[in-house]
Image 1: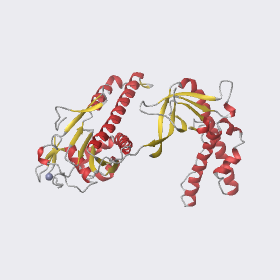
Image 2: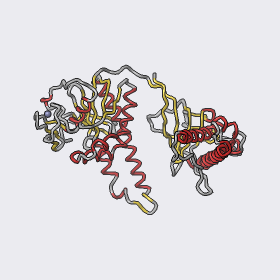
Image 3: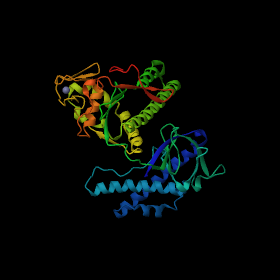
Length: 422
Ligand SMILES: [Zn+2]
């Protein structure tokens, strides 16, 4: 068993009922921060030292503002300030004269809504009804209630239990909850010693190559159709007050469907890897592209496009890591350097090698392969010394199996008319 924490984002269903109370807490957290900020400055001016975290708590626990929040929530504000001051103090000691101490949380006469954190003693969780009771401090208790009763909603595949911390975060528009949960992940033995390589891309969302020469393509058909549909002009007109409600709903729907696709794809890939007895997956690390490919005009277009999708590829890679680790499979992020230019059959990298209509054609050995699969094979090679064992001439690399996503079943199925040009 692997013990760790996971943070789940939750929407507050009864937002109108609790937003005033959360506002009060958020403003109070800012006020307490400022009190502590002032106190620290004073001690710094008088002694040349900053108070310790324990000193700050001792000094301020009887302060009026301390009792606005649950004691653990107030403690958390002081801890945060002490951490920020200590970080600054260390930098200063090391000669960094540009470092600034943490500031006050004020905008004119207003206090911004700070994140409010509840720890276990301030939380009661009713998992049956998806409700959280969050304690208020003495000063904010009133005839209405001593606590905030928030109804929440998470992604359907998330089980909320063993909550360690609840954070109320103002996202600029409304409050949302971040639930930090303790989880135990059963770690299985790896399904085998084989390896797989994954290339993420635009044309095909994902290409995967296994030791035995098998290769699969995932064109991301649904993503393209969705994007085409939901980004039509009628959903994108922005009035004076920003995008219309209809446009916002369309965007939300698009992002929900994309989420669904990414989760289903990560799960499916892990299942395929179990079938192929894979113990280790190499996947292209998109974060390194810019430095490495800069100045190389030949590949800049493709790589530049990939960079635009970087955040999304990163999200997918993280999902894959989560799901793979539960089955004892390691995911290794590897640089994509040269992986699209090198021939995976003969290993030669020549300018004469070219990509035509999705096919990589090698001028040295004559191999013709799906370009994305060629990339996936090259990425796989970065974590293994094994030469390819599959028969490269049988066309499997030129015509890999294409898996299409079925939105209704939420599953991937091999396409009958699979080809190099899905
Ligand atoms: Zn070749």
